Image 1: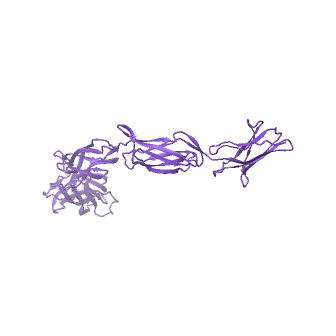
Image 2 (image 1 turned 60 degrees about the vertical axis):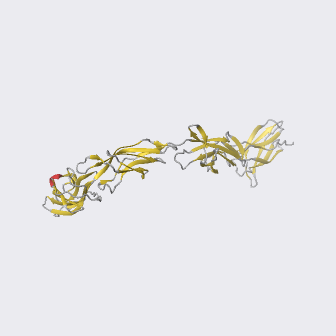
Image 3 (image 1 turned 30 degrees about the vertical axis):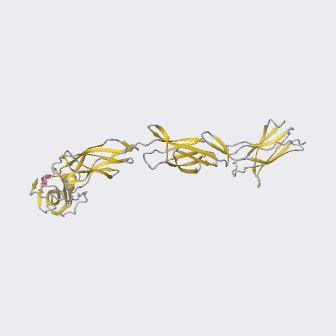
Length: 442
C-alpha cells in the first residue's frame, strides 16, 4: 500500500531516469543490495526497483521524498510491488499501480529491503522518481507528401496531450509551444489551442523528414520532452532532357580528325519543353572498348541551353553529355551521341613481284601504320589479276617486324602471266590498304 504524507510545492528540474539490469547475487550472509530505483520510462508514475540478495527478497518499502523540500510525502509498502523480471533473489520489481502523489516534480527514493534470511538494508539514495507529465502527440499529419520547385510549403497539424503520471490519463495541453522540425532542425514554433490542437507551415527544400516536437519550456516545467513520428516529405523533380544534334548519325573518321559535338538541354514546363539555362555538366568521349573515357569539356548552359565542343577521338566510341544540379528539385539528365568509328591509317611502303626460274613468282614488301598503333596480327593477302581490273586472292601471308618496318614475302608456284598486288583488309580500328600492282617480266 502507499501512504501519502503531505502535499509539496512544484519543482522545476526534471530528475534523471535511472535504469539498471540485475547483476550477480550478493555474497551469502550479506544484506540485500539495492542497485537502483527509478520511474518506468514509459510510465512515469510507476516505481521500479532493482534488488539482488543471497536469499529471496521478502520485503520492500519505498520512502518517497521531495527533492525540493526533503520532506517525505509517501511510503510504498511491500504489497504494492510485484516482480516483473528476474528472480526473487535477483530481480526487478514494479509497483502494480502508479503512485498517487500530491504534486508533480522530482522525488528521491529511499529503499528498505529485507530478505528471507532476515537480513535488512536501507539505501537513502536509491534513485529518483520523475513524477512528470509525458508529452504525447496524436493525429500529426502533413497536408502533402511531396513538394515541387515552385511550391515548397508544407502544412503540419496535430494534437498535443500529456500523460499524467498518477492516473495515466491523457489530457490536452493547452497553450504549449510546439516546434515543427524540418530535417531535425526547428523551422517554426506554434502554440496549442484549448484542445491541444496546433497547426503551422514550414518550407521544405529537400527530401527530408518533418515532425512535431515538444521541448521543455520554463512556462511548463513539469511537462517532459515528446515528439511525433517523422513524416518524410518527397521532392517532385523537374524533368530535364538532352537532345544531341551532332553527330546525330553514325559516322567513320580518320584518326586525328575532329568531330563537332552539339547538344541542347531542356526542362519540362506546363507549356512544354523549353531550353534550360544555367545548368552545369560535362561531356565525355566513351570508348566502345570500355576503356578510360576522355574528358571533352565542362559547361554551364546559356539561354538557349546549347553546348558545343570539338574533339578528336583516339578510338571508336561515342560522346556522352550529362548535367547534374545541386538543387534537389532538378532531375539529372544524360544522353549519348551516335557511334563514331575511328580508323587508323595503314599503308604499303613497298611491293615487288619477280618471276623465278621455275616459272613461279616471288613477292615481297613492307607495311607501315603511321598513326602509332599496330594490329596484333597483320594478314596480307596476295592477289592476282590477268587484266589489272578483276582481282582474286591467291594466298595469305603475315607481315612481321623486321627492324625497320613490317615485312612480308611469299612464293607463288606456276604463276600465270598477269598482275600481282598485296592487300590488307580493314578492321575495326584500321583502314584497308592496297599496294601498287606489279606485272613481273619473264
